[in-house]
Length: 178
Image (cartoon, rainbow, N blue to C red; front, top):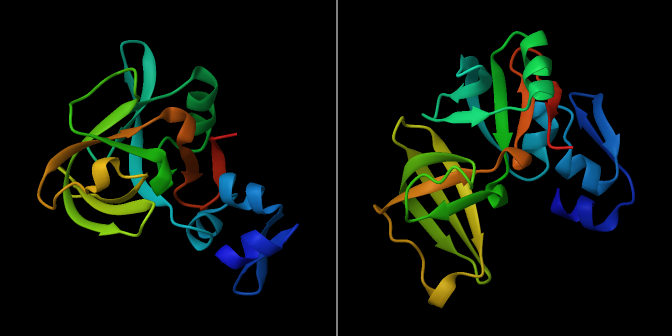
């Protein structure tokens, strides 16, 4: 699929003979309209969640064990689709830190590194949240040539601007990253 992104001006993604999305490579990758497209072109981490109201604000309580704050307009969109969205985030949009939660960075998930793969300018990590959810994360330009050791506890930060929302039942995009 990477080759299609590189050589194409427009792409049509089909699933079982049905066109799921037509768009530029950027649109297909950055604004997937279905769960199938999101997972077919590149990798997308999917985490289930439920809308929850706390302190007069609506957030998504992620099955991965954290809360994802929502704008009022996004909360309304998600409420209209049943309140149990599937949240998607690409591996390159997950930041990994040694230190704990920082509200300025967004939603924080406590994780353990269970695998790391050095590929040159990139390290690919497989993380397991404290609640058992598996996430893939990527860190470009590893600092000091090292990788985070397997078994080390880390914190994965998800910025709300990097999150995609899908209707869990229909598999269709319902808001998020614009």
